[in-house]
Image (cartoon, rainbow, N blue to C red; front, top):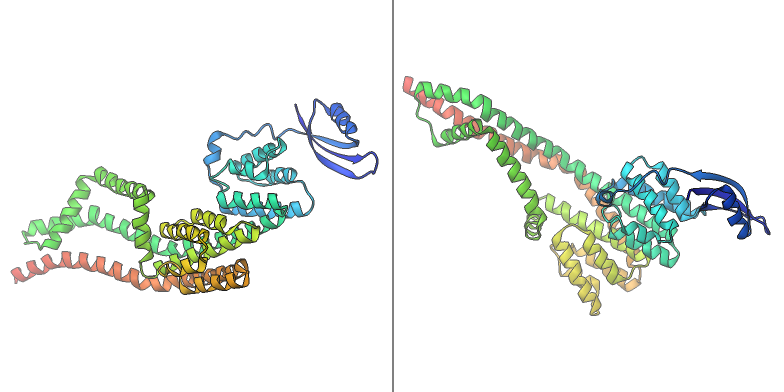
Length: 406
């Protein structure tokens, strides 16, 4: 049956009403509303919802963080304006330009119309709406504070988006330089070095070990171009797959935490995310144990996950969270445990953690802004060392030849 968007007024009080109903035709719709005590004033057939179908694979496709951020903010505003949730989601599905997200929102709208709760509808798309998103919406539904919870969630997503943007921006410069250096090195080995090696061969010069090593590497790349490319791709894919395993994550996260400069950034980013997410969950009305469980599954670093899982067991046994946090000094600076202790004593853990999150977000901003000036000398040393090694390897045999001529 077709669906209709309608407006009506109460036959007794004259109060306006609006919504969406399925009916055989407009006459049947008017009859249904009349039986409920309403008089139909306007009607519009809804044709687009049935046209767009959500495919099974759409459930596993991701959506940009900005799309979810805008969705949360706009949904909170619409609900605060008195608009029904299903109608608000329908309006947002018409506004978004992201095709996958549009399909998902239309399906969520249909599920809500069929009687499902918002959190149940969102939970069908775990790749788009993670556990944090669904849990907070569920708490908002149960408590009747969905508008407030969506506002908190929108702020959480905005801060997370800012944090990720700053870290990615800071890593862009060194990544481009290193990729350019690898590309230049590949060109040198496959095109330029063979010509120089030919000169050495004609001269009959005795080559030092480092020169022989570079020439051997060059010959391998030239004679096995496809195999070399396959080797690089294999290493990249294998490294990615290994990093996706539990053991691989542990090794990778252990190394990252101990890299100078970058290790400090990782600690500050995780502390900021922990403080922000935990504060948001507590504000939304989630219990301490449930909030810690959600945060543990939300953070990416394995060692932070383990620390929070340990804290869940300890809190259930009656210990304070600040005590457990203080025992992990390599992950949480002393300031974190001190702030949490203040929150536990005053009963304002959510408030003090929000301020702590702002502090660490500011720290990350300051570090990322100055990162280029820190990395530049290191990059210069790496590039200088590579160029110097190549120059010495090439000039040494030339010097020997000149010495023999003299």
